[in-house]
Amino acid sequence: MNEAPASTSSQPHRNGRLPDDWRVVALAGGVGGAKLATGLQTVLPPGALTVIVNTGDDFEHWGLTICPDLDTVLYNLAGVNNPETGWGRADESFQVLHTMGLLGGEDWFRLGDRDLAVHLRRSEWLRQGLSLTEVTDRLRRAFGVRSTILPMSDAPVRTLVHTDEGDLPFQHYFVGRRCEPCVIDVSFVGAAESELTDAAYTALTTADVIVFCPSNPYLSLDPILSVGNTRGLLQTLHVPKIAVAPIVGGKAIKGPAAKMMREMGYPVTPVTIAAHYDDVIDGFVLDQEDAAAADHVRMPALVTNTIMHDADDKARLATAVLDFAASLMPRTRHPAAHVRSPAAIG
Ligand code: FO1
Image (cartoon, rainbow, N blue to C red; front, side, top):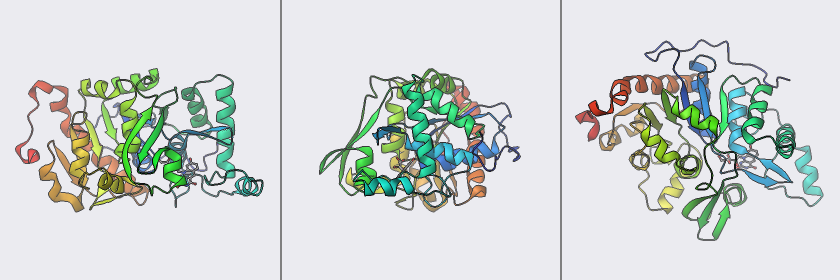
């Protein structure tokens, strides 16, 4: 089966400074991460991209295992995502959800009919004893996606949002309560005891470039960094590690990142994001609207247009990120010789 209506595999890949055989790993959450991952897939040679995806948003619903971020990345890389929401399928219907509501079932989380088939199949394969990594790869192949998609962990990790209304499981905070409660802190239940999958570990330790996609740092990328000793592992990897700011002009590109930052007492600027990743990245990309903030980022910074409306925007940003990574290469490959440029220190 190939569910993808149109593979992007025929698109030419970039001819920048990055060698063709480089392996790129993207760390991604939901919609923002999936957009940049799609751009990276477009501009890289087939098979060069691996996306390690947050599974802290996963939950059990209708007796099924739902993995929203894995599915968002899958649908975007396959080109079958809903372009308005960024999550879920295009050309979706909601007959099952409607009937579920009529039967008194839970209908606050909008599972579409096409989407539901993925949850049914995933849950069936998990019950048969396959790992989430194996299930995700089966789905990837079925949808004709040429990039590797990996869950951060095969063991359950569940994001818990500590709010002024008490502790809320992630989807109850995000969808059920529309991110309205005031966030005090976030924790990742099971993360410390779990570990990166072998596939994710190998991808990271053999990567030539690691990209932190413009996902919510606190809800989407922190869960990945919190799995076992992933943060410590990243600190030891001397390849360009580039983060793209999800905050532009004092607002989140999408989702509750800016609101959460205010609630947790952080200035809503890309500088806060760069500082958050300070120990694990060596390059930072921020939007041209925030050009002045680049002077306050304590590492090499690239100022560019980070807004991704369409496929060209995604490819353009991906190319800019990869070229920036290539420009950092000599310094990061030889950390002893790493000299920060005075202009970038600010
Ligand atoms: N987000 C919503 O805001 N409302 C929904 O009803 C909803 C349903 C949904 C179904 C499948 C799926 O894969 C994602 C879905 N999302 C929905 C998105 C999801 O909750 C969030 O985007 C992520 O978990 C955050 O990255």
